[in-house]
Image 1 (cartoon, rainbow, N blue to C red):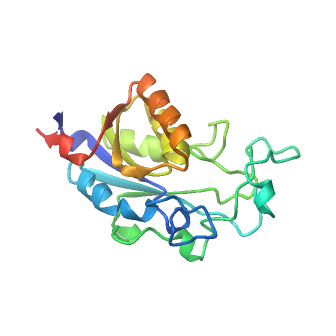
Image 2: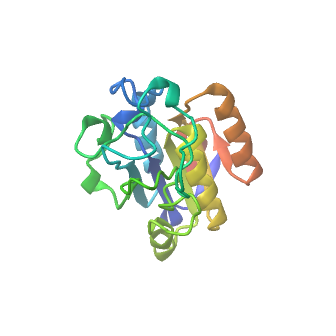
Length: 215
């Protein structure tokens, strides 16, 4: 069991949106992505604060693939905060932008990160708006202002936005716990690589929230 001091712990729901689930099959449907709400809610019981991040994308952007063949191909041109192309997803005003069923209303969270609004930026991590990690979203500063030491993380997807957010939190000096039952990955191979990368950075991986205990 991992004993936590609730007063210095935050729970972070990374991009648990319909656009990353089979509920929106034309976006980026991750298998079982819509089934993580219970574990996200469970881990939140061990935290004083609860944070959520959302992709809030525009309908048109250079990183949007116009055909299946373009997906994951490099974005051409001088776009330092874009890397590869993805299907349109989590567009503001659509179902894909909303949180998955079973989670609280956005207003019930203590802090909301909205990222990817700028069409010339497609961040993965929730702590920075840009790939170069120079323009912060404010969440690191907010967590520090609340004297948070430990952050429990779950969300979508393990091998992209979760991994990047976790590594950013590690760099900021937080103890990070990843609840694997509250995550789902895009691909099994890249998810395995992501888990190793997180562990190498000092992250604690747990199977589910039953491994947690409050002091």
